Length: 250
Ligand code: PGA
Image 1 (cartoon, rainbow, N blue to C red):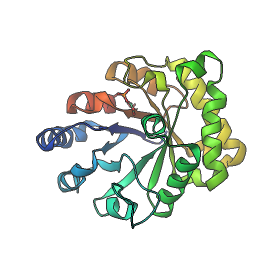
Image 2: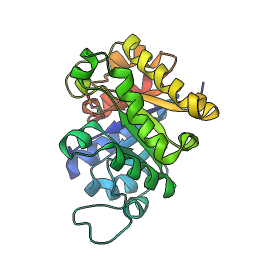
Image 3: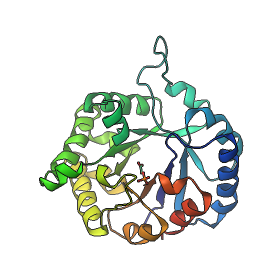
């Protein structure tokens, strides 16, 4: 099987010193990771530091968010052209914190996804249901609906150059993880949904699981047929715990 992706979403954490320590640990440890591509998503101010430290290593750099417009009067926003100058190759889009705290809707998520691909970067499209939606039995319809909004805007074939991250909202930062079986059920439904519009792209599509992933839970999650790696928040903030998740990729 093709390699997995283990992505570390630092969110709004770290400092110059913490970034130096974390990246140095990751650089030394990355040689022990055989079956996963590591990607780090630092806050914007640390992208230059990440580029300086990681150029020439196997670790990739991602951006946590992006503006769909390329330049101009968008106070506080950051463009794809800018992050590309700092070696970014992946961009998160549709993270539940962006959807919930900054009211990003499916249309905005789709516009960002299209812009990311137009800039020749790879979007990591995040989808997931709330606890309330899961209790109501809406998990699969919510998740496939979020994906369909992107298919409507970009087409199924666009998933040739995209990654999906399934992150149940109730599992993010809570210490609760979907069981491997629960996660696999959703991952399989996601792949089937993509296959219904783009059969060829579906089989190679990387679908990451996210939500309180630790080295302990990663092994069994990564062993599921349709789980191709993880999007890791809290456990990506120290080199040892992030590397241990990378090692869980077999
Ligand atoms: P968590 O975050 O691992 O801290 O739950 C995952 C995410 O939000 O990507």
